[in-house]
Image 1 (tube, helix red, strand yellow):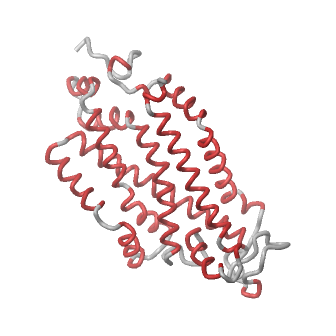
Image 2: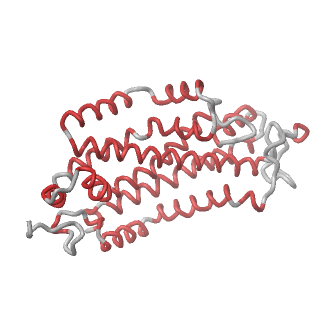
Image 3: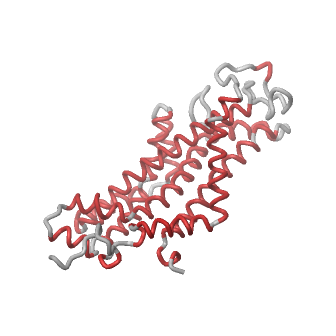
Length: 303
């Protein structure tokens, strides 16, 4: 046992620990990420959108609770840079409020889905055998169900609020990270340092939480970025189909759905700004996710 090198020792590479677990690997990850110009654009865009949604209302005050039908569908002009919507809400202020709920639900659903999926996949992959078979058959069965149909059904029978929308969007989102982490676990559980932990009397949960999940962090982080983008799109789809947050709350999907009605009347300000924000947010997250995937890839970092 004296010849076994644990992952906390100075020579991580001899112990079979992925390069990403070392400080050197962390520096390499950052260097590769910073070399990706599209990722930097994505980071800047995402920060700008977040500041627009959460800091913007501090400087641009609008009434997003009481409607004003006398000012409905006013074109952009003085006092309303992006005009007003069909019930008189200031469209620029509405974009900020709708962005808050969209981003909050998107990130919350992605983090919740990642937590459940990582735990599920790590347990299934580590124990293997019958436990793995049963757990992954459940995942396969849920993946075979049309997601949008079930989301609409759940949104129709459950009272819609921010918490319930988060749970509804996360309900199916955890399945993909579960399969990814299960695959990572099948590889990591055969590493020397996992065998060393077993030989020293360490339990299964210690191996999972202290060694396997931390060494799969690259896959987890990358997946979360894509999950946020997917969650925002799913929320937009629900809102577009009429299952978004009830008024006076707002989200980008519902705003897009309402704007479509007036598009052919020439009231472009009700659809183009919110459409651009949805597309820009999703593309920014995808750019960041692509760069993180490349940065966590050891083979690319060694080029």
